[in-house]
Length: 496
Image (tube, rainbow, N blue to C red; front, top):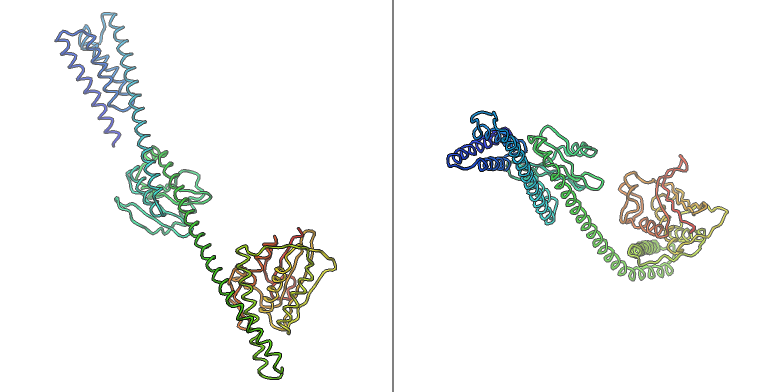
């Protein structure tokens, strides 16, 4: 309807200016002016039509109508299109050429001016958008700026759905007011737009434009479906530029959020490590005194005395608590890089022997089976830390097995590495625990009531030490034989 009205208005302008030029020409004739002045009036008429109408067609039409009007009203014989004087033909041709050139140049200049103004307005809009996006401090602010900018551009209601890692945010413009909505089907929207090949998807009520980041869909821009595709096509370049700016802004906020979260995690981890280190240092001295005193009392007490078992229990609990404190200190030092790995060629068999002896001393009722191959290799490692790894793995096996269930340590070699496996016949690793067994302070959620106490540091230390040696460690349920249940922990150390 707007285009039809515009066409009728341009036709009215054409007819009005030609009529005005003719009437003015009549006044010039009565005033005794020459025909050349009337030609100038019609050329001025062509210029005005070209300037104030749309497109080249009205300027061309104005040139032809002006020529015919001049011939009809101002050249003999009057009020007819016939030409008696051949010299008028030259005048008509020159007048027509002049009018056409004037019309073309004027129309072109007008179009160039309009294009320059449109580009200027677009650049101003993009500049303002970039400033507003740079000032935005969160996702919600970016969505509001996006909706306001696109709404001003297209003069219609806009919606924007942010699909983030932590949730979904949906704002919609309804009659000029921004309203937070609930996106109930955003999963379907995301699936439909992830592999979209075109610029947008047309749904029943809206045009849906994907806003993509690096490798994933960040948001969806929803434009009122009442808008015609021709109107969208005319604004597609600017709309694409807005979407690119919004994509960069959303990624910037996500990166900032991740950096803040990482910084908070680091600070939290540092505070926790400092607290654990402080507590551990404070506990070592009294624990050493308790162990020394209880050991002296055991030497002074007959084993048949009932008090001997009580003293022995004190000693064992203090020893367990001391080993726990040592684990905390070692883990915090390893994580903070305070412990340097000093690799020397060592025999893994000797280290396993020391670890087994230590565990059997702490648990004299347990027997550990060791399988060593005939071949012999020296492996570069830090003997003290590696002994702690094997001790922790054996201690973990003891805690998760009954006295009559077997524990086994097996060693094997490949061309490039040594493989150490610690197996038991206990209850195994529950599927819900498998992804978390090497996390700090993680303990099984499905442990039997008779399993010995622990706070989940032993395996975390093992993983830290093995990775520091350039090796790998994993834990799984036993797979060597169907008749055996239980868990097995396997770590590998390279020869170089």
